[in-house]
Image 1 (cartoon, rainbow, N blue to C red):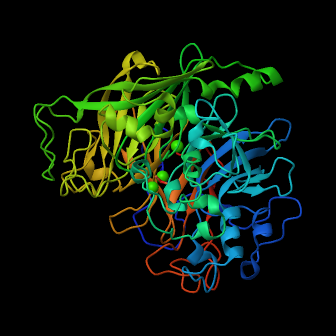
Image 2: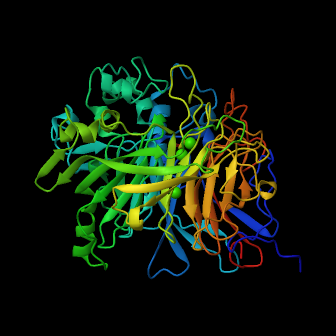
Image 3: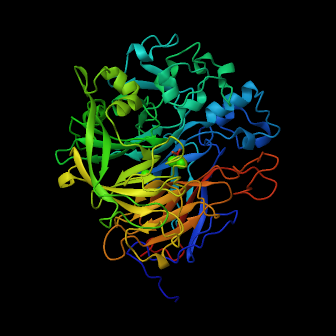
Amino acid sequence: GTRKPKGARGLRFTPVAPNTADAVTVPEGYDQNVVIRWGEPILRGAPAFDPENQTAEAQAGQFGYNVDFLALLPLKGERGRQLLVANHEYTDEVLMFRGYDADNPTREQVEIGWAAHGLGVVVVEEDRRSGRLTPVTRHHLNRRLTATSEFRLTGPVAGSDLVRTSADPTGRKVLGTLNNCAGGTTPWGTTLHGEENFNQYFAHGSRTTDKRYGIGTGATERKWERFDKRFDLAQEPNEAHRFGYVVELDPYDPDSVPRKRTALGRFKHEGATVRLTHDGRPVVYSGDDERFDYLYKFVGSKRMRHGDSRSAREHNLTLLDEGTLYVARITGDSPSIEIDGTGRLPKDGEFDGSGQWIPLATATAKGAVSHVDGMTAEEVFVFTRLAGDKVGATKMDRPEDVEPNPVTGKVYVALTNNSNRGVGAHPGADEANPRNANKHGHVLELTERWNRPESTRFAWSLFLVAGDPQDPATYFAGFPKDSVSPISCPDNVAFDAHGNLWISTDGAALGSHDGLFGVATRGDRRGELKQFLTVPKGAETCGPIVQDRRVLVAVQHPGEVDGASAENPGSTWPDGPGTYPRPAVVAVWRTDGGDIGV
Ligand code: FEO
Ligand code: CA
Ligand code: CA
Ligand code: CA
């Protein structure tokens, strides 16, 4: 046989070289298949994908557009099958419709866009002889939730005046979820989905709070407000207060109404990942993906119940409604910081320091209490960014996915980039965000005091400072830089069973396509970063899941390049010339059937 590639356990593969192929490129000795594409029918009665004759009704029964987060959950009693849960973050109308007129979208096009957003649940089946996965269409658990499905607001904001609208005077029933980016799987068998850039869907924002959330004063690019007045804040000012939450879905109950968990705050939630305290309470980490925005965590006050009984499941569906929301203040401990592109480390030799979780508000069954002067608890949970501003939280370089390592408990924060750092009147570099005009991003490693998830103090260090390893301003946890892969713009993160960190990228600025990378977090190979795959032109790499025998990624927005259209797409992946580019989920496995990277 061939010589076995070296590397940490789980990362023994030959790295994929940076490239610009319009394909998913995997290491030698690995194979792949497209699991499911945008438009494939998953519900009973849904028609086959017909891009020239799209309808909203068809799309509502088909797999949605642009997948970011992916979860794979076990399915008892159905051998070889798992439950795939996907976020359909947003739509790219210019790539979806031939002849799309952005100034005058039709009602049908807008409604197709609504139906292509949201969440998807689809049972997938594995091939006995390979890692290939295929969808089980029309399974009774398959489900689509869209921009018009019913969701419930729960927790401290539910029923508040701030979220009542003319269509929903109760302030509890919301139609739709929007811009779900990353997410997480809970230990009690549900999934979490972060509502991220919800600002883009709302027109005519006029309040200071709208501005802080990036809602514009004019019409939107999507023009949805022409077709449903709730997207026009001049008519329905509170509708925008009903988006920007973490959604919890019970994918095992196809009739369940998903909940928007307001106790986790309202901001551009990139995602949400859970870890339990020693006494079984949930701690949820979440980043607010904006230049100079914050890192948050929620510490629940109720304990998870084990087991699959109805009462345990019902109890666990209340865990995220009570607890305290915190924001991070991160301090460097070096006498001076000189990360200015010359590659010098801070004077004490490391990018590191300490930090504090600052409480913002606490939600209880009896009501909520604010810890921020001048803001009520309801205001803290709805205008969470303003609460973070008031308490002096640390302004970060776009916090994307934040995830605890299930093996070590250390928490990894992907900070994707920040073109404005140190530019004009914007804040300059600090030790936790050490580069001005940060093009390539970095990854911060956070250790809670005593490794207790509920601690209010932590230590931190930078794990990676991304870029071309030949650039002296990069850092790979101290690993020799002559043998690591170049990486730019870390976004989603995941872990394998060995505790290796897997990082997917979005917007890589080194001239090659985005991809998926694995890196050891422990041992003498800590920091040895290796590229596992690359994605087609214009795509970002999303949703990584690394199981023992299979890696799953979502190829999001293939063909999304400047000036592209359905007639002239930047990519024709996955189906080749003459076809529409189709966002899709891909499975990768070892041709010889062995474990990934072992
Ligand atoms: Fe949807 Fe922050 O990426
Ligand atoms: Ca992201
Ligand atoms: Ca993740
Ligand atoms: Ca991103």
